[in-house]
Image (tube, rainbow, N blue to C red):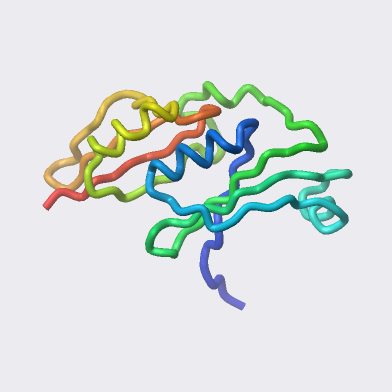
Length: 146
């Protein structure tokens, strides 16, 4: 048996609408929304009484997806990770390839996007930055230079 592909990355948020707006402005497309509850999610996530609203977002090329979940029950736990720095252990960001990093940064600002440090240039290959979005979500932007 071999791995077929990475299907999606999941992020839990308190404000689903704000997160969807942020990732839509980034350029992701809303694939669908729904509510997940019952025995199957209870078993999968190891919790009882799971009920959460989800939004599935996909990249324009259709190859990558992001599942954004808002737990209705059990009540979500704030583990203090919203203000974490980049060297915190665990998953810390999703990286996106973009055409114009300056344009994307400006479009994300009204949706809570803030550049963490600055926009860096890696040799003559990439311009890179990290953005903290709603709920402290880290994303990375990479613009390939020609």
